[in-house]
Length: 358
Image: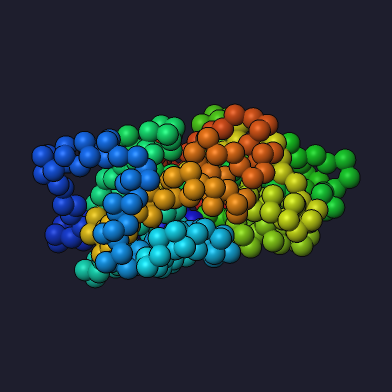
């Protein structure tokens, strides 16, 4: 999903030279006053205040990579609580959302209020000046890895990136407990790889070291993997027996298939658990700024986190336990960080060249 960030960066730089995308910063006095006000209010009081303002706006437009089925469980809860504020959910992959936002901004359009997607994509949009800083009332409840200390973003959910397994298609005698197990020649032609998962390789470099991470990707490539686009579709095909295992699947989707649909699905208990932060940021020129803030407040509140939990996705607030504990209870977590974006171009080049992605 991160294939076009480098190209988009070049386009955004050119556009910036023409005067687009600047973020308007509030005056220091206003910022200090607002911060003091938030500190004195409980989360419920902040939402009540914003709701009165948001009712006149009537709509909040969120660009999010949360799939439609899960969004139908989350956003109606918000709409029921805050009657008169309708959620307009534009769903697409992080890559496609990034392209859409850049295109709109270059055309002088300000349509979205909130972006919520993979950390790398949201970080790119932040870098272009298309967002503004905002700290929710529950900001301090979130670990440092799940927010920007200055308020550029905060996460409402995370994705566990785990090798998925179809227990009926795995060859006899073959086990998949870690990424290295995918090098087994018995898995030749039986592995699927989401071709946009460059971030998984970036994480493996940090976890295993450059040489070992490169060797893992090379031997997976030697096993002639099926290159796919879209984690949800790939997980569904795994359940259908299209392949025996995946390099990386969204853990919550594997759990949904295993526990809700009773499919022959399991996942490798890797140590650590690669965890992709799903960042959320407020647009710089949000057409519905109060509604945008209200949605961010609610999604990071206990009620919003419980709504996210109900889908099977892992809530970002560690105080809210995941619906499926065995997605997170077997090893420590390795969070994808914004700092890892510095090597994106290099990692993308190796990933594409090794796997034969054009």
